[in-house]
Image 1 (cartoon, rainbow, N blue to C red):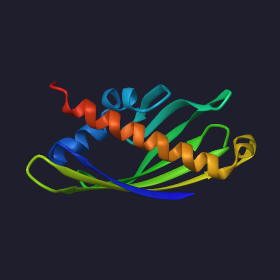
Image 2: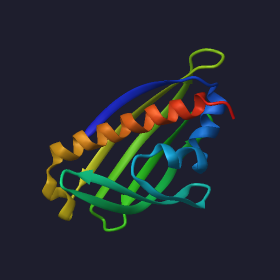
Image 3: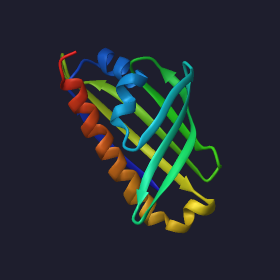
Image 4: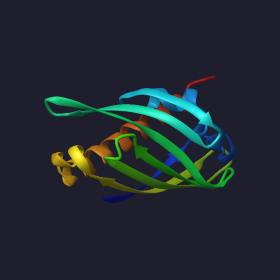
Length: 146
């Protein structure tokens, strides 16, 4: 599954970069996020619970940052601890005004094992919904006064 999106952030590119790398800003914006802990500057432990109709799926895993070009781009690699799912997102930031940044990303998600029994189309729909919820919460959070 692959999808792309762009989001306008109401901050400079430098500030957008700082916020996108601040665990305390990100964690409350991630739907169902129970844990988001830095292991190193480019690796994080994460646990997310995803509602799946009548049940919830708890997904512990790791996020790694690769191909980091500070204040411009990076690749997020996400892998579930059970090896049942992987995701990769290429994130790029572009200044589009003094206090506005255009964030573009392309994500690719692969599911397997037990979680694949829910079906790829359902996971695609869930991934898109979670991304939309994240960016809505993220933009609201950065609009709040510090």
